[in-house]
Length: 115
Image (tube, rainbow, N blue to C red; front, side, top):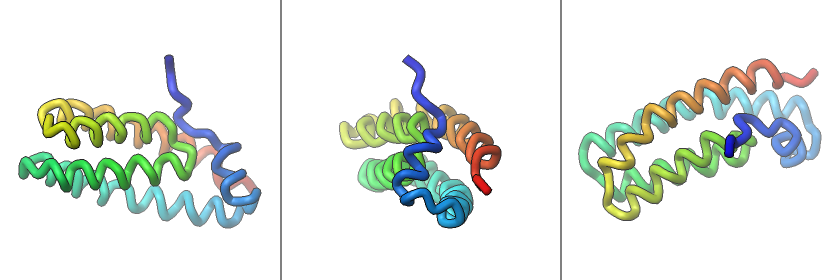
C-alpha cells in the first residue's frame, strides 16, 4: 500500500480554502522541517530516545497538518521505535524520512501556490 505524498485537498480544507494562507503555511513548513530533521538526527546520534521520540512526533504532526501523509507515516515509525528504545531501527528510517520530505517538497512546490 502506497501512501499519498501530498493531499492538497485536505491541506486546503484545513485552511478553509484560503490559498494565500496555504502558500504561507507551505513556505513555513518547507523552511522549518530541515532544522527539525537536523535536531532529530542529532538526538539519534546522541542516543537520546526521549528527544528522538519528541522530534519525530513534531515532524509527524506537522506533516499530517499539511497533507504530507507519507512523511507523517515514516515519522510515526521513528517515533514508535524511539518510544520502544530501539534507536537502531529509528535510525534506519532516516533516509526514508529525508526522501519523503523531498518528494513532499516537490509536490507542494508544484501544487501550491494555488493561485
